[in-house]
Amino acid sequence: MDREHPPVSGGATDASGSGSNDFLLMTGQPALLGLSDGSISTLAPLFAAALSTGSSHVALLVGLSAAIGAAISMAVSEALSDDGKLTGRGAPWRRGLITGAGTLLGGSMHSLPFLIPHFHVALTVAIVVVAFELVAIAWVRWRFFPSVSVSRSLVQVTVAGALVFAVGLILGMS
Image (cartoon, rainbow, N blue to C red):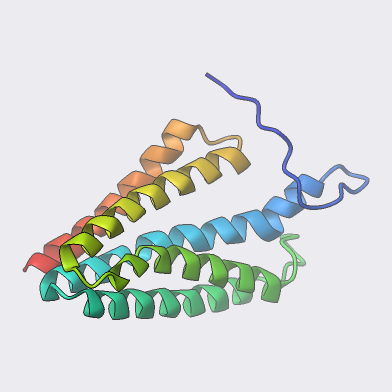
């Protein structure tokens, strides 16, 4: 079933009617890129550290360091990817900050449950947070990018997350 997507707000529409596209190119896409990358790329180191040590403290440190490192890397990469003139994607420093912030948010959300000192409780909460993150990312992709169906988005994001999560499990249990 095809669903009509409401217009995306976030900027005044210019004479060409591209305000929504500008918002998506300059804000939505960099934010989603960061959120997706942060959420998915930090799963393997976080869960490998958690399972190999059985320590909430170690998992928290590894998860947060992976999130911060990924945020810096993604911010710099996005800021250096283009100057925005050719692609119309806006100021590189702005896209870099947005991408970095999204990456930090995505990477740290499933690390924070390891503030819970009881390891098995923290691990369970972290897994639930990961599931919520992946569904939320799939929903955001569907909401802001009308060419992606919700089911297709859910499958793509979940498969990517599951693969990286599996790497963390395999390495953490070895």
